[in-house]
Amino acid sequence: MWRDHLTEIIIFTLLFLLVSAMGFVAARWRAPNDMAHLDEWGLGGRSFGGWITWFLIGGDLYTAYTFVAVPALIFGAGAAGFFAVPYTIVIYPMVFLVLVRLWSVSHRHGFVTPADFVRTRFGSPTLALLVAITGIAATMPYIALQLVGIEAVLKTMGVTGESAIARHLPIIIAFAILAAYTYQSGLRAPALIAFVKDTLIYIVILVAVLYLPYKLGGWGSIFDAADQKFQASPNPNDGILLNANNQLQYITLAFGSALALFLYPHSLTGVLASKNRDVIKRNMSALPAYSLLLGLIALLGYMAIAADVKPLPGAKAGSTDSNTVVPLLFDQQFPDWFAGMAYAAIGIGALVPAAIMSIAAANLFTRNIYKEYLKRDATPAQEANVSKITSLVVKVGAVACIVFLDPQFSIDLQLIGGVIILQTLPAVALGLYTRWFHKIGLISGWAVGMALGMWMLYQIPNAATGRKHFGGSAFPLSDFGVDTKKTIYVGIVAVLVNLLVAVLVTVAMRRAKVADGVDGTAHGDYFADEGDPRVTPGPAKGAEAAPEPVA
View 1 (cartoon, rainbow, N blue to C red):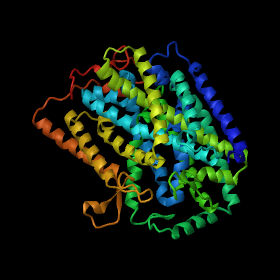
View 2: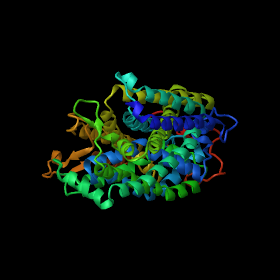
View 3: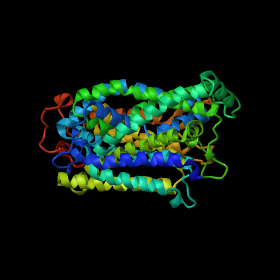
View 4: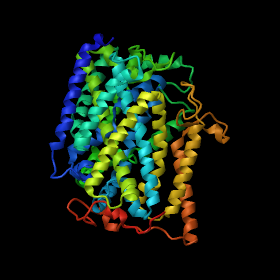
């Protein structure tokens, strides 16, 4: 009952109201003369310095879902769940120079989205449209997943109802407030709130990893309890160590997830909001501090095993909701006031990325669908207004996913999102370094990679939920005729095939002398810095430089 958690609810509510007020105040923080411009509303004026960018990108990448789902995965499967730690370490050296080049060319041409860059780089509105649609499709379930984190906290505090609407009413109210201050303040709102969110998470996790091992008998007892649980598991892949059957899946999932991380539109939104190249370089060097925090968060899964935490019942009869493991751990092991702080950290941790994701998806629609195909002469004020309205629609869609769909299906959708966003890697990431690919080659590679990825995902069942299709991202190699029990991450296979097709078709197009799009960028654009003039006076006009109306 919620009355047993009254202190936790009060602390949670007060901190939530505090950040909501900050969200509305953010409209006056570093306020421009005119918010009716995507550069201001959608990118915070492209003026964020080192600390703001660090909190903003960190708050965007390390979400409420990360807080509850990574420990839950380790609670259920053991070592395989640690894939999230290495991939958030290796990604930063990989993108250190890539993101600097993207910032520079975007600064020169006024690009707001990765699809803007693709439109100008390859002279293909069709390829840009595919990148935009892919980004929106990959982002939507990610937003819905943030609600899974809040829902786990509310369920632990006993804030539930009988009907679907009553059960989700607090989430609906929370996202209505989020929608209101995001509409008013744009990217400045999550940037300001991220300071509170990340500070809370650091405090909560550092206290937990110091106090809980002491209370539970030390790290040796914690790992012994986890090992004992997995020894009794019917799944041979569960355990505190990887085995021969899941090592390939672990490696490919970690590497594939790393490649996908900064292809997501919301990740790039924080990068493009930085004021210069040095800010990005410093952040790519400092953001691994969040990966250290993630490693500590992951260990909460083993602590929950040692504390004998039992997950709350799931939506279906006989099922359990493993996402409640961390909230229950704090509820059982800490005073109510501290548990309330932890719940607030998770709840606020959902608002920051959800706001950035909705803004990123709205920018994609506005710049690469609305402006490109519906109203080519749209003014900056019209663009900003359309983006604001679209961000509201995106949030409503995310809430609808949670209210009317099984939350487990939202988790599976996010796995699909990682596979499909990887198919933009050749055009976006490789396009920053080479113009060798033919636009038809990139479109063909995207289509084949997407089709193969969807087919592979369709073949994967989920034994836990009984779903026959789209049940995960671990594809059995035996389905390819290989005599092994090993699995591989679907995204890696799909993007490799994508690249192969793009290369083969490009070679064929070059030999056939098929006309290619016009590259609207210059070599110096990729090294521009703060203070360097834009190529054109208005934002995104560089995206119209290529004269060809079709791919």
